[in-house]
Length: 78
Image (cartoon, rainbow, N blue to C red; front, side, top):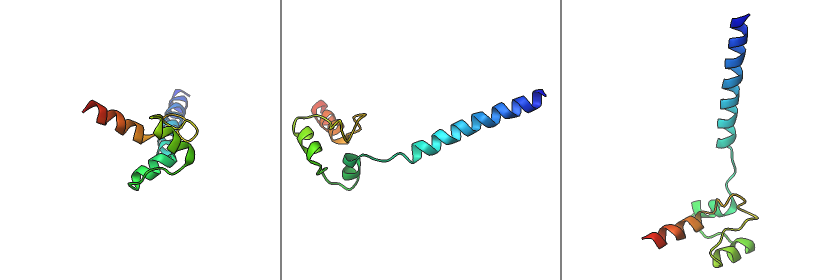
C-alpha cells in the first residue's frame, strides 16, 4: 500500500512540474515584446502614449513586461 501511495505522489508531482513547464513555454508575448523581437516599435495607441510618458502600458503589459521601459532604465544607468 505504501508503494502505491508513493508512486501516486511522485506521479502527481511530475504532472504538476511538467504542466507548469509547458504552460510557461506557451505563454504569449505582449504586443510590445513581439514588436521588440521584430526590431520595431509597438504601434498600439495606448502603448505609444505610455512610452512617451516613460511608462509601461498597463492594458497590454499587466505585469509590466514592456521591454522598452527596461531598455530606458539600462540606458540611464550607463
